[in-house]
Length: 270
Image 1 (tube, helix red, strand yellow):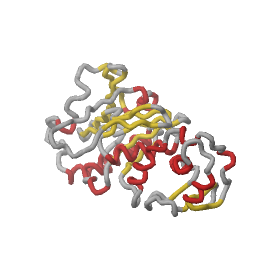
Image 2 (cartoon, one colour):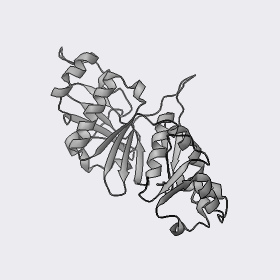
Image 3 (cartoon, one colour):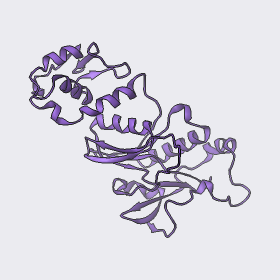
């Protein structure tokens, strides 16, 4: 591990002047060279409690990136089209930055799984030496079981060949370190709209007065029937029903617009 004096938020390697005539600069050359690239031949730069550090990628598996600082600040400019903010994860009780609707959708999807212990945005720079390319993955997730997940978020229609090459190198590096890797690039149908609607029902207060042990152990019913079943909810039977959908205790097809006619499933039946 080495402390670095250079700025962690500075110019990534791919934008620095190439050294030597063999530097890969064109997308076509980059893709052609991918299969011959050692994904572990890289340095990883990160920041911990304000100290800028660097390790060889082969030593990165033991780093607690869930405690790291964000290495790349979101850039703001007039008429910027991206929507950014901070998302509160009910599963970890922490606010995590996002800079697009897609990143917020990923965080909402992750929150529903209830498996995350900590989530860090832009946790590191990966600098591949042989290709002089750099990449800052969007999120590092430490799960409750101690496993790690590295995530890139990009709408599929916006993934260019150079992006795809970087994502593939990142996947290979993550696999070598024993991490999972995800490119969050699509959501079916109305899923994103349904997730945005369900966010208001994350608060456990909606389930006050509900005995979860009395929920059906299997079977299906309409969402409206579930609301009637939850008539004794302290605050709102409808709110309690949506909270159960959020928690996936009542499973619904979020690819279709939610309504009282939507079918929800319990147990293993689908």
